[in-house]
Length: 73
Image 1 (cartoon, rainbow, N blue to C red):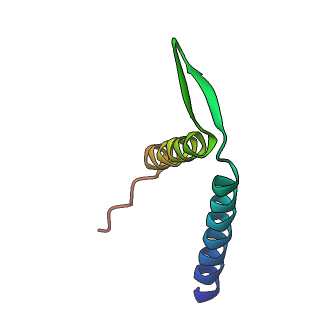
Image 2 (image 1 turned 135 degrees about the vertical axis):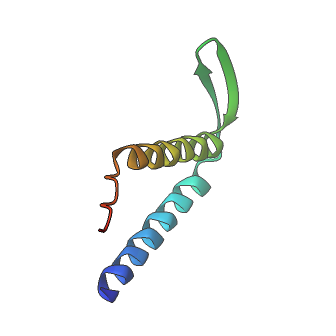
């Protein structure tokens, strides 16, 4: 059980480090079109917003698909 927990921590750390490297390397300004709006922002901000939106979407989906706990009798 401890090995599984350590593996999860290592995977999370590696993923976070890779995300941080990608964020740091992308500082150029880009134009982003959202429906009728055109917004200029650094790529890093766009990546962080996209990452956050994906994270929140994943949490919502996991809560929706989570099986209810069985009631102990």
